[in-house]
Image (cartoon, rainbow, N blue to C red; front, side, top):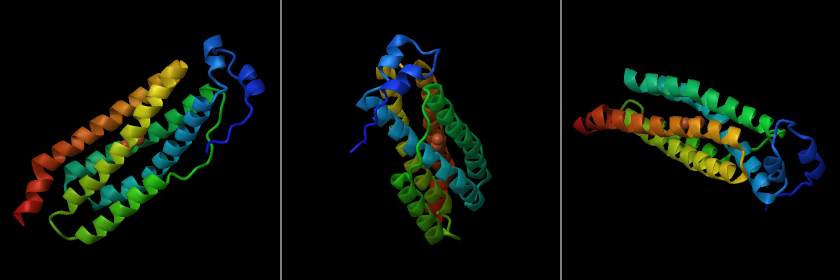
Length: 188
Ligand SMILES: [Fe+2]
Ligand SMILES: [Fe+2]
C-alpha cells in the first residue's frame, strides 16, 4: 500500500519553472508511485555500484572485465540522474532497500562461488549480470511511461538515456557470451 501524503501546498510551491500541467500532476497516486519506484531503483543502482567491481575482478576475460568496469561508470551516472530528476520535481529520494536487486546480487555471488576456477565462470557472471539488466530495463521502462503520462518531460529524457544504456549493456553481454564465454564453458 502506498502511503499518500498531502502534497497540495508542496506542489504549488515547488519548482517555479514547472508549467501548470506539471504542477497538476504532482498530487496524485501515480506521482507517489513514481517516487517510490525511483527510490527503489536508486537503491538498486547503489547496490550495483558495490557489486560491479567484484564482478569485474572475478571475470576471466579482459573483454568482460572491461565491460563491467564501463558499466560501473554508467551505473554511477544512472544514480546521479535519478537524484537530478527527483530534485527537478522539487522532491527528494526516500531511503529504501530494493529486495529484488538484493536477491539478484546474492544469487550472483552464489553462482560465482560455485563456478570459481571452472571454465564456465564468465558464462555464469554474464547470466547474473543479464538478470540484473533485465530488472533495470523493466523498472526504467515503467518509469519512462509514468513520467510521460504525467508530463514530466525532463525526467522522461533522463530516464530514456538510462534505459538505452541498460539495453545496450544487455546486448553487449549477449555478444560476449555468444562470441566467447559459452564456447569456452562448453569446450571443457
Ligand atoms: Fe543502471
Ligand atoms: Fe545496469
